[in-house]
Amino acid sequence: MATGAECPVGIALCSPVDAFVTLMKEWETSTVFPVFLKVTRVIDPRNLAPEVFMQRALALGVGPEIVRRLLSAIVARGVHDPIAWGRDCQIPRRLIDAIGNLSRLALEHSVVSGTDGFQKLRFRTHDGLAVETVIIPLLKPGAVSICLSSQVGCVMGCQFCATARMPRRRSLETWEIIDQFIQARHLARCTDRRVTGAVFMGMGEPFLNYERVLPAAELLRCPFGASIAAKTITISTVGLVPEIDRYTDEGHKYRLAISLGAATDAKRARLVPLAARTPVAAVMAAARRHAQARRDRVTLAYVCISGENMDQDDARALGELIGDTPVRLDLIEVTDLTGRFHPPAADELRSFRDALTRHVGQPIVRRYSGGKDIRAACGTLAGEMIEETGGGAANPRHA
Image 1: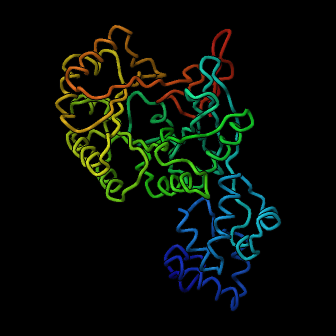
Image 2 (image 1 turned 60 degrees about the horizontal axis):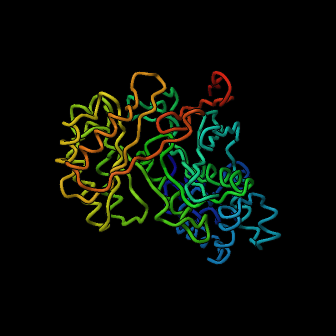
Image 3 (image 1 turned 180 degrees about the horizontal axis):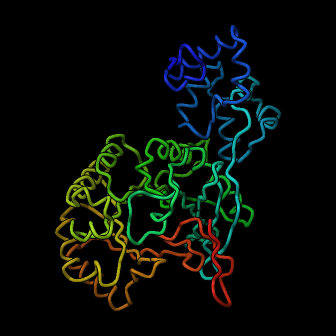
């Protein structure tokens, strides 16, 4: 295979700066390069962390202020028209040409819960895959958070999760994550709602798509991007220890949520088999390192399944596992579309929470998982839409 210095289509094989120097030389000397520009986008600002896009723009002779204006237009205001970039933002032609026309996800369907106002969106990718996003109403009137998908399907195999049963799987590009946010925010703004946060808790395991999820989070946080406060952005994982440690070492300020599933290896192997290849004690040790580095509590998410992981022994095991690691424990009632796993009754949940209070002795929060009537709740995203939410049986539409 030719190296990046030998062939423009090998750009990914060399450094960003060298790549653009090579491309500019090819522009001057080659009759092939103009054809290459027509079929391959050189830069997609939504597909790079802001600082990386800044470096690549600088290689084209474009200054930082122009980069800020362009990112503000695309990510903050949702302007995707290259003509508008030049006319309204004074973006130079060489950068506009390097970007070209930006691809978009196709919004196929939107449905709002008649119970709690959760709104689920289904997008279609260029290769025909379904991606779902949820607009979550918050307690503060008019405020919403966006639940983003990082993958289509999921290989982690959580037994109670519909996403794990999707037949086609792949990681999403950073721009596909950002486009979910931009389109969901537009719909929210059209109904006088404002987006104040984002959670990477939709389809997929975010840390299996680490190299694309973190740039997306940076674009959301960036003051000339979506300008979402880092403390209102949460990234969730089922407990990938190397990635948790990397995330901690890199010093990211976003909230981290670790989903345990169970407090013992035996039960975790039954409920979250792939994640359970790592001992739960190792996951908790990584959580402890994160909490110590951040000097803050780490969020542990615990899916409550009746008769499975909610007896007194489970509470005791969870307390022993956590020890004195500073945590916030979120209890989420399972929603399993297959009917195999059931949420706890009120008495069972109360008894389990009382036991956790004795054995854990740290903040315990019952986290509401809304949108059950439209299959927008945790563990139900699988490319399936519900046409009707009231008056009779729900009618699902499959991807």
